[in-house]
Length: 197
Image (tube, rainbow, N blue to C red; front, top):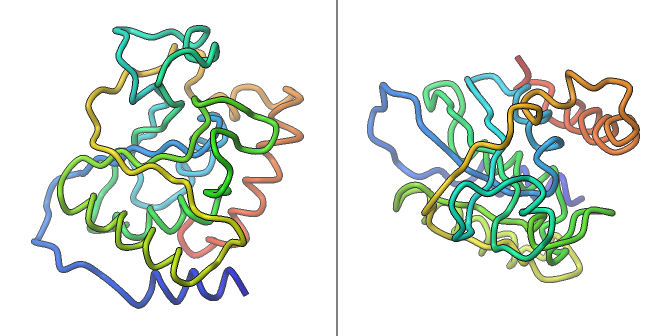
């Protein structure tokens, strides 16, 4: 039932957009960036996915610093995408359907402010679109608990260390990949098979 209501909401409303010829950028935090990268890389129209850190104040944060939970940084992915192939609205649909936006500062066993649910918008249209869907999903009562997803302007973004890039693809024997990421990817691929590359 949740899937049906979510699909109706995202299919039923679209913002009017000006003709866009260039690539666009989106930044999402929805748990471990290894998981998010593995999911969003598979979408048609997504050209590049860069894991990184956003939302904190320290310059050039490291993975160890962010994992300490003492910063306001979130693990995020920054996408470069072609809006003629996939819209921001469609990216938000994937965002909402591939994590639990009701758990504060955690996704599954990953706990801390760095794993919070957050949308960092790059312009007013992204802000309005994100707020609209958050409000509609709240009204539709898709989840039993309130949505805690933060919607904030992007003020900084630092790419993560190189070894985080393509982590799922490059570490097939890793236990976290096998037990956490693979089930998420398999669920995503069933749900969004028409949007896969």
